[in-house]
Length: 184
Image 1 (cartoon, rainbow, N blue to C red):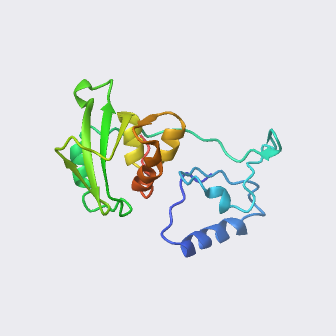
Image 2: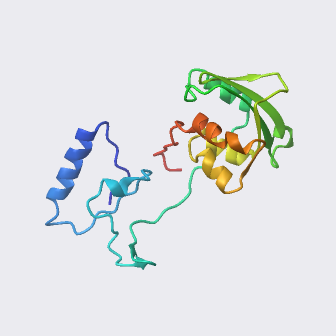
């Protein structure tokens, strides 16, 4: 049983997997806990040994769970912390209507100016496009846990100009997913 596999480069991962494979005369199955949502592309045979089939003829490969829940409590400071991050060189003024049923004062409209990929909160009413989103979904989007396109597809965000969905998706598409190996 491997609680989490951590490696710095492809060579290190290859050496770890070579060692594990060399134990195949002593080990019939490896249970791997990972946050890597593409691990099935690394493993030669990703079936989990249960021999359960999921209709129609899909082999069960893993069980999944949702764990860490991030919550942005100050959107202005969060965006300020990302001042050096590149939002894919996009230029757009995005108004965000934040819905927060837990902390009512956080329910407000914020305008972010993305200029050549750099973001800054501005004190302006005009925007190229406006979205309405719950703080939980906005937090997940800004943490890289979900793409904007999926939130739109699932009806979790309203967009004033549907033709801007792809542009907004590109803004946030390079946000790295959160990773935490600390149990609590």
